[in-house]
Image (cartoon, rainbow, N blue to C red; front, side):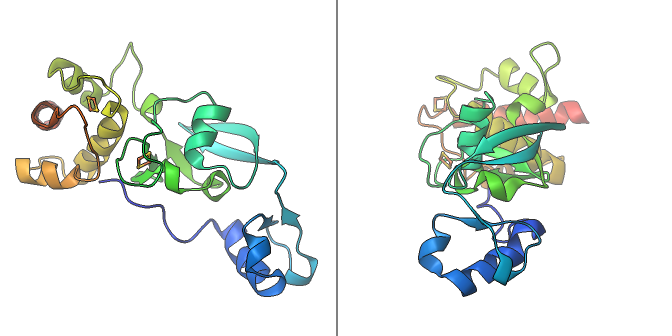
Length: 203
Ligand code: FES
Ligand code: FES
């Protein structure tokens, strides 16, 4: 199931942000980050204006300019045109925004884009293509495991991570592994069937 993003941001931000909190106060921290590698006394506050960052998305480096408050989900959708991850609850409750963060499923709505610097992000677009679907994507199509389809990208990404860790899950393990993803249309039985089919096809 998609997890909340790791509490520790990349090294580039971790030390300096802590120092920032100590030196200039929590109120200012809500609107700024501190440049990588800078010493507390010389800290450069980033934001609230947009700052340039580079993210590794689906194996490619993407340059973008975002305000530090922008979530990874909005950076993907609004800045990079990757709309596979869906914006639904924006509070980590539905799994519609699931992406892989260094191979592990997370809710992209709960992570700041600046905290994704230095990590590998994989979206549903990076798992396969219309011409060459991934095994999980193909199984969802074969099993007709969707109705409106809004939850489907999140389920596909979460299922991919599930099968990486457990190539032959039982039905109960599939249910538990996908418990963080919600389908308002109630397509669960076909989704579980698709995951079982993908597991079989992967051998
Ligand atoms: S939109 Fe991120 S968990 Fe619902
Ligand atoms: S297929 Fe409609 S929300 Fe899941």
